[in-house]
Amino acid sequence: MTEPLLVLDGLQKSFGALRATDDVSLSVDAGSIHALIGPNGAGKSTLIGQIAGALRPDAGKIAFMARDVTGLSVPQRAQLGLGRTFQVSSLAMEFSALRNVMLAVQARKRSTFRFWRPVRGDRDLTDPAMLQLERVGLAERAQLPVTALSHGERRQLELAVALALEPKVLLLDEPMAGLGGEDSQRMTEVLGNLRQEAAMLLVEHDMDAVFTLADEISVLVYGRIIASGSVADIRASQEVRDAYLGE
Amino acid sequence: MVEMSRENLFNAAIAGLLLALPLGAWALGESYYISVASRVAILALAGVGLNLALGFGGMVSFGHAAFFGLGGYAAGVLSHHAFEGSAFLNWPLTIDGSDSTLTLWFAALLVSGLVAAVIGAISLRTSGVYFIMITLAFAQMIFYLAVSLPTYGGEDGLPLYLRSSLPGLDLSDDLTFFFVCYGLLLLAIFLSLRLVGSRFGAALQCARQNETRLSAIGIAPYPVKLTAFVFSAMITGLAGALFVELNGFVSPSILSWHLSGEIMIFVILGGVGRFYGPIVGAALFIVLETVIGGYTERWQLFLGVILLGVVLFARGGVIGLLAGKARHD
Image (tube, rainbow over all chains, first blue to last red; front, top):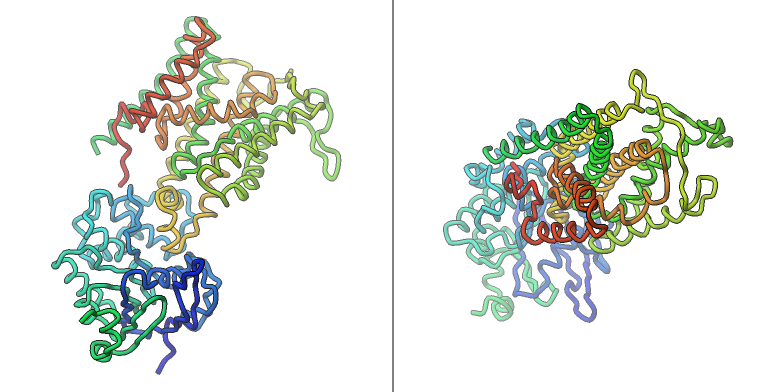
């Protein structure tokens, strides 16, 4: 068994009296999808924020590719190969879809401090960017500004931007949120095909998607992981049903 | 693409007009208007500098007079020492005065750039209204520093008796001086165009639109913004050196917060983030000052009304009004 790509060890985060993250430990193995489920307010986004580096944990450690990244900033972690999508799409709204992905390509190439050559028509950026847009099914909408894209298309674009970083691990914060049946099916398919390329920590409410995709599921309630295991384990667990699945 | 070419056409018309006016004035022997055109070009250049920070980087600097003034003082002080035949600095190294235009420009670029690196490094740790206030505070500090320097005229300023010399050109000729200012203005716009269109420019514009996004893809916004802030200040600093040359006088008024506001007005009137906007803004400002200012001292009332109209009804400024919305690809 190789070392997991991402290991959380005893993470703690409180906001005042609220324990948003309470001694959370979990790991994401290479080639696998680890789903994180739980009711609203369970602290899923807070946890993603700490892994991505936007929030600093009060205690605990985050190791990424066998390296302690707890003290690193968001850009530093992204450069190491920790990609993320946001629960609420967060994009450069005035740019076209293509430009958004091109910027991620240039970030991966660490070539931001180039001041002269126009990015427009720069095949080194446009070709890899178009490739990612095609994968998520957005190639035909590449030239449109983000403001002209539908909600679902923005979700797809978020993923394309994250993929352009060629991440080792993807943190996906509710990628299906607000998607219609057809779109979420497509997203499920795209994510399923990605697993070998990037391991994923998937926060999701859409149980069909979670049960289809996940290799492992952890259930977060009030900041604590109350259960962790395979899809079958979680489906069978009485505790999880009581706390969350509501069956 | 149709919209783009319309803006290009409009830009060409603006640049052409600014060139035609002093030529016409020269033909009619009205040399006063040549220096008015030079003023427009210089103030527009200052605006082009601010536009880089404000328009493309979203950094609302209310302290750009600091860089304009520092550029002006750098040039003015060296020129003053050249006239006196004294040295600006004897220790630890000797810096003599200079009447070489290129040296003065270099000094202006250097000083404004270095100070911007310090001011920016501190100010960019804040954002929003705090950034506006802290840039203003720094500019005020430099203003009062200049006021308290008796060697260089203190509050009264310093007359400069020496015209600087540029190889092959006679800058004391009004029209030649205009051409130099005009050339530098177009050069600065061209450099801005390249910069904004480059990879660096893409990151800078993303920093304006969504810093969280920029961080998430692994580009730290801070160094990007700081670099742009320094470039921005250097362009405005060069404008300050030209302004001092034009007036033959340097005083703390070029460091005052009024001027910071005026440079911002040039940018907003013309259109925030529009490459040729500062020319329109500066021209409109000077026209109002010259024409309405000839009738009443309260010409700024009209400026206020126009500014209000632009802010309320034409966010893209005059260029946005006439050439349509800015386009990104």
